[in-house]
Image (cartoon, rainbow, N blue to C red; front, side, top):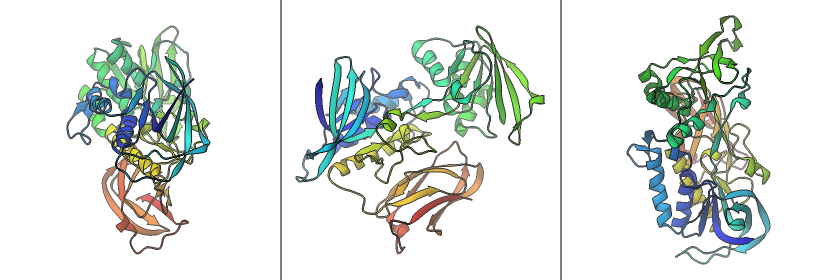
Length: 435
């Protein structure tokens, strides 16, 4: 078996993995990216629509254009890239090794426990050891089995991402008359894409009373194409023997199905856009603690999991709205991993928790002595809202938000000045509320 060793290894070659690896490379550490596909770029390579990069590059790009910017930098760097390579498992070893010192930095006496990865590639099995491991595996789509739509099991049912690949990469048209179940961003984008290729999109059906996608996608993908959006509606059946023939839709009234008002929409294709799930089976098997709300790892202020030296970033940590935010977070994860390899550890961390009308807060630990980038999601739709931060039940910061909704992530920063002259200890709790 081939054995390799690097200061750091990144699992996943999408935007998150490349951004994190480039940060480690800039800090002078040897780094490898392990990617199971035959190319870097991840899901971006099939997202041929524009709208990417407005924050990251200050211009509007397609998904492949956005990915190419990072791929070019990776190629020019010293980062080792292993394509068509799958990580079977990883574990933290009891043995330690002196830190490999980065270029132009003072000699360090810090030792870090090895992480060991077992991989399969076209050239056979590989064993890779590293000091720091970054999880950047992204997420996958929920399917019909996850939401348990009753009915027959005909052909013509796709996840929106699969349909996107069929149309944009493989050149196939999935059907002629489609209904999209769920109003997630990829479903909205595919409603528009299917219209462009000549398919009649009859409706987008959403169980919640508000859309799950970004407002701009509601406007550009549905309203601009006169595609109906049915809110507070549940898909209660799929009809058809060999091929989909239609679906049954039932209104929700105060959380209860109004069966007497059910109606049918005829179609030959159903696209599911019913949420994303972080790819964390590998992490869980290695003992990484998962957050019960996000289904991603529970991380501290260094974006480090409960397993020493294992970090997480991007959609494997929590599902983002924009790839720009993925890159921002992943660069910080790479920087934190480099600092950890150099021997830096957080001095004091306090627990952050979701309060009133907040679904989750990430990361779940805050370091009062440095700048913290915090991501959260609202549980309500509200205009002129106020985000309130409490330390041990005392309000220390508030911020007005013009409009909030569950589909749009809230970015927030806390700096050392926010904690100035406050009594803080390891038992302190930071609570985030929306009112």
